[in-house]
Length: 183
Ligand SMILES: [Zn+2]
Image 1 (cartoon, helix red, strand yellow):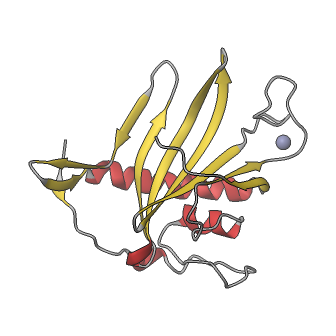
Image 2 (cartoon, rainbow, N blue to C red):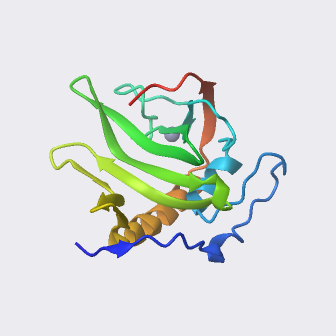
């Protein structure tokens, strides 16, 4: 696996992503299309408490699942919590299989609030027969390292995912605050 020492380099080339028609308050411009899209859709980056949100494609629910609409579009669950100066943002499609909650898929983003909102996808997981899970950042011999190829591909995937979610015109149906659950 290719490894490089972490360079906390701010990639500002994407910060021009337009955030129109939003109240300027509480919007933190980040270099992530996904995070900017989520903020525009009602997700706050300033909540200190663990907060969860649910987005539906439409209100016509599937007869077969309470996490899917009639058109087969899975709901989107977003959760945010703080770990020191990093805001963690989990973006996930959940489905149920034999009573188990499955992720298809989940990406957790690290939003560095003290680094102008510089954002890295840090973790992903896909459940199912070929379950995969990995973390971008890791430590080895006391050095903080990351997988550059994985980071690049997750960033690229995230841009496509955010564009798809935007095109689906999802609406926020639930936003609630609750105490952080130790994970
Ligand atoms: Zn629908």
